[in-house]
Image 1 (cartoon, helix red, strand yellow):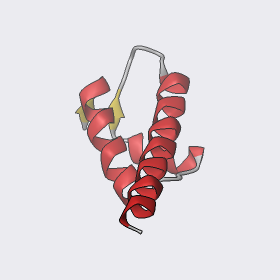
Image 2 (cartoon, helix red, strand yellow):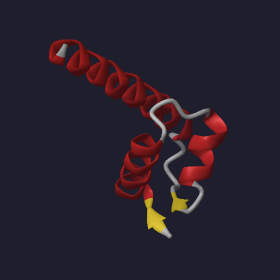
Image 3 (cartoon, helix red, strand yellow):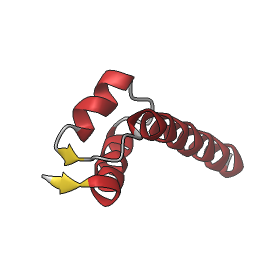
Image 4 (spheres, helix red, strand yellow):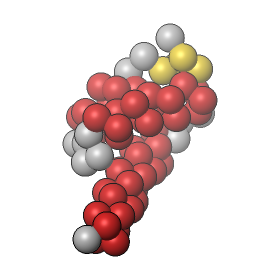
Length: 67
C-alpha cells in the first residue's frame, strides 16, 4: 500500500512506461493499491492521461528529429 500523491506518482510513472495511452479503467487498476483521502481522483486521472499524451508527443518529436 502506498500513500496518496507520492504513491500515485510512482504507480502512474510505471503505468505510462508500459502504456502511454491507458484507459480510465487501466489507470484505476494501476492506482488501486494507493490510499488517498483527498478526493482528487478525477483530477489525477486527467493528469495521468495528459502526461501520457505529452510523453507520446515527445517520443514522436524525437523520432522525427532522428530522421
